[in-house]
Image 1 (cartoon, helix red, strand yellow):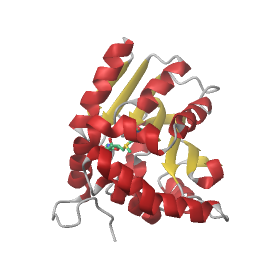
Image 2: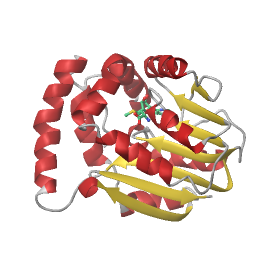
Image 3: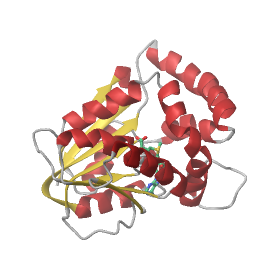
Length: 240
Ligand SMILES: C[S@@+](CC[C@H](N)C(=O)[O-])C[C@H]1O[C@@H](n2cnc3c(N)ncnc32)[C@H](O)[C@@H]1O
């Protein structure tokens, strides 16, 4: 069954996800860093480091949101980073951040859906996405289009929440995700569904080997899963 943020609404997952991120966009960065204890910053840095050797010049950041992964990718010294997202609210916050950094010539944020990317085949040297794929309406279709716009030999890096499996991290994580995170998330974002959707969508997401199987089916080769922080988060790397 598809997990959606607003169970009492009839709209499709894509529309509901865009609406939810529009609602929480003013508080998204604050909640992200607060609820993860700032470790999300380390996770993105770690993922970007995997691209250092490849030195990609044209990078696509899918589900860019407020642009944190795109901003982190500036350390690779690329010519261009394009971020796409379906939430105008998230993009507006991101554009402001990029303007403040004076990096608007390098990072460009556009409206775009991962399942029908507005780019020609084989265009990007690297495609990256952090905490986005779990929200796709059709994961396989999203991954296939990411593969399409990546150039041969290009690298794809996906960062996503995963489920820790060992004692006591599994139990601690489950308690935190089910009780503490939704309470703080609701109090600050004023959207009672958004931070219930987060643990539900993580629970339903095919992580680890299950994700690698879908990743490979989309065409990616030399795939690898790198679990981080007791398996709370995982990086999936693949090549075209
Ligand atoms: C949890 S945020 C992650 C934002 C950012 N990448 C980060 O690391 O903070 C997920 C983002 O995915 C976007 N998103 C969800 N489905 C999408 C799709 N089909 N195409 C593009 N963006 C999508 C949402 O609008 C939201 O901004």
